[in-house]
Image (cartoon, rainbow, N blue to C red; front, side, top):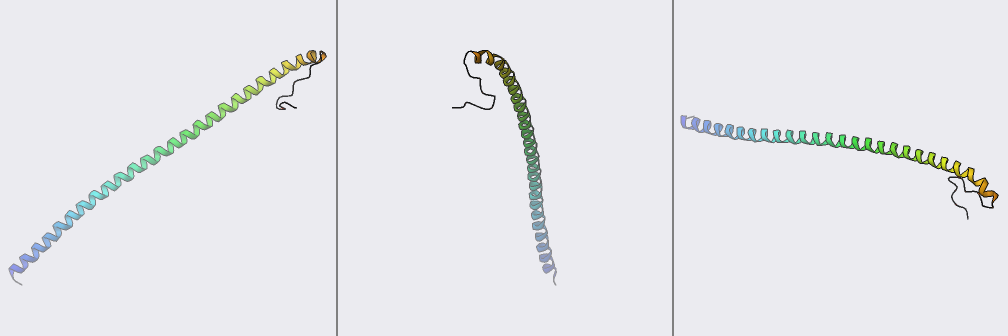
Length: 108
């Protein structure tokens, strides 16, 4: 081998090393971008899970509030029915019929 051949070989190797370094840098940048995207997706997933949990908690609170309101209304209806029941015997003596029990609805 001559010095010219060795220099040519060294130039080829240096070119290959430079190309590999450039490729390495590009791949490193892609890895960093992908890591950033993964982190962003993880945060989005955490946010979505928290929003879902908050929605479930809100729905549960609304359900409990509705249940409490229903119980209050039923209590008020029972109290009203008792008051009306005390008036019915007086009205019944005059020929009126008694009102239906709560939940019975109207009969034809």
